[in-house]
Image 1 (cartoon, protein in one colour):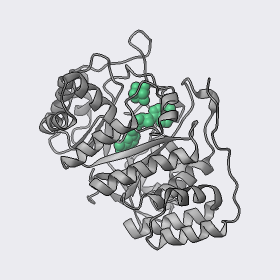
Image 2 (cartoon, protein in one colour):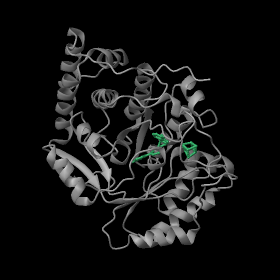
Image 3 (cartoon, protein in one colour):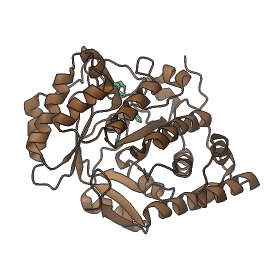
Image 4 (cartoon, helix red, strand yellow):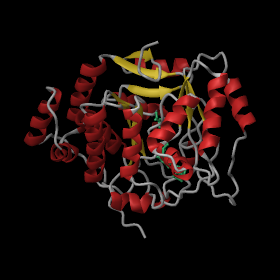
Amino acid sequence: MFIIFQQQAMTITATSPAATRLLEVAVSGGRLSADDALILMSQASLADLSAAAVSVKRMLSGDDIYYNRNFHIEPTNICRYNCRFCSYRRSLSEPGGWTMSLRQIEEQVERYADSGITEVHLVGGVHPSATLDDYLEIVRTVRRLMPEAAIKAFSAIEHIYVFDKAGVSFDEGLRRFMEAGMDTLTGGGAEIFAPEVRGRICPDKPSGERWLALHEAAHGLGIKTNATMLYGHIESHADRIDHLLALRRLQDRTGGFNAFIPLKYRCAGNSMSHIGECPVSEDLRTLAVSRLFLDNVPHIKAYWPMYGAQATQTAMRYGADDIDGTVADTTRIYSMAGVEPPALTLDGLRSMIEEEGFRPVERDTFYNAI
Ligand code: V47
Ligand code: SF4
């Protein structure tokens, strides 16, 4: 039985003197402590958080807001884990599951040949019979058909599963992925590191420590990665800040994270649906405090297929400098959780950015302007 301790919408009309001082610290390049971030969460007005987060964003990326040309391949939604927030996974015996053959993967890549794609994003469920060799074969197939595109292959959770099964270390497994053609991995699977909450929302998933260790191993091999956080369910503000602190500490050691991506819990069609979704004010607060607290992470991504177009535009006013890519209709993670299926053209992405007074910049996976 869940005990719901999700924050209600907080209306803070005036920033407290303590929070005002902290915003000044952050805007002048100072580092916030975890306690400071908690004060901002509960005592800063949205207007002041927005102004401070955009000011810090401008110091890092000026007027630029990034997008890229990508598509997703989701080879399977059959999953041996059972995350309670997931609307997408199916067990082997349930209807609605899919597993793509290598030929189907080839066909999907071929559909995007000659379309200027610079990134292929691979992610899916953790099929109980998946092996390291299966994953490597998928990466090799994509590499063969798209020699120029960056391959962002799988989440730490998928890596950990096949590495454990093959009995290889994180280093060895990641080296094999690099040989197969992987350039980077996705930031998925981080959820919330706090063990008590993690144990309730995704009880059988690898721990936060192992997620962090896998990314640390990747950074050690020169692989840049992204980091996510699933928020807006049963976690507290302190759990969110604890998550950000763990990422900031790892980033201090490795410098390997390119972007942080806060992912809002979407409630349709999963076994936590009854808790509903957090208010938009919580999205904006979380985005802005992430921008201010993660002073060593260069980019904050507002993933538009998860927020929807309108909220993504608002997110740009709270410190986000990246909205992800064309994605098209190739991901089902969010449409199966109740969000309108993604459908924005390249021009649509650019106009969204321009309407907010920023400059759209097409980037590659590593944030080089194209
Ligand atoms: O790990 C699953 C999340 C993640 C739900 O690296 C949900 O650039 C909200 O990691 N509501 C996968 N979130 C997606 C992901 C990602 C997305 C975009 C870009 C990148 C990147 C990575 O989706 C999962 C989980 O945290 N998720 N179900 C849900 N109902
Ligand atoms: Fe499986 Fe990922 Fe869904 Fe968890 S979030 S059940 S690991 S597909």
